[in-house]
Image (cartoon, rainbow, N blue to C red; front, top):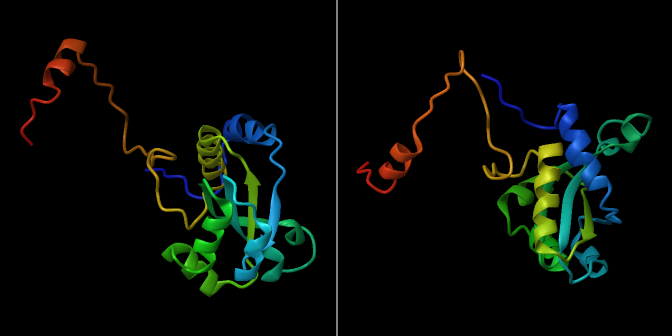
Length: 168
């Protein structure tokens, strides 16, 4: 059985979703993950990532001085309020993250369109597989195989007549 966790290693994912995200020209901004930094974040919708800059723990020399690992990716109708909720510890996953690691960064981009927010969040989660996001089956299902796959095909009538008639 094979299950992918973490960064996408499929080049097609990067060519499709990565290039699509890049072409959105998001204008990312960064603030430190500290309570008083929220005043710099607009009261607008958008996407965000809580990142761990690797140079703090590994080295300030290349290649580690330019890595910032997305630990959590999300979206919100109000980035300032969501930042405040995260930094106050209202969510257990990011509260635990903040307690373990110092120097976290909150990267955000203002995106007012809720549909675009959802597409961006989904693509970023698929690309980076942040470790503290809870599994969201609609965004990135766990797909695996065990043995040789078997294809089963039922006539449409059998499928539609069975819907709603099950007693399990």
